[in-house]
Amino acid sequence: MTKGFSFYCWDSGGPVSPNDVIRLSGDHECFVTGETIKPDDEAYWTDEFDAWISVRGYQMIENAQSTGELANNREWEIIYAEWYAKDESSAGQQEMLNE
Image (cartoon, rainbow, N blue to C red; front, side):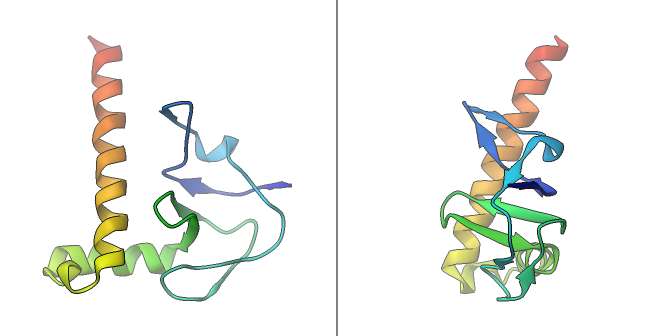
């Protein structure tokens, strides 16, 4: 197993730091683009599809959301909703800790 950069990974109901995420060694295929993600590449995880998404794939989803085209791709819409919910939950947890 090797460490890799990743975001939106959760364990025990809370976010996991990108530095603490362990990915199975070897290359992974980006769920969005099909490109190869190397073990040390930055990547994003989607629990909904049990898959890694490259930085380029992440940018494609973000761009689709900002241009209103997200509704044209149900899978991307689900991934974006998952990430949005996790961001909101994480922000809420941080806010509670700061009170």
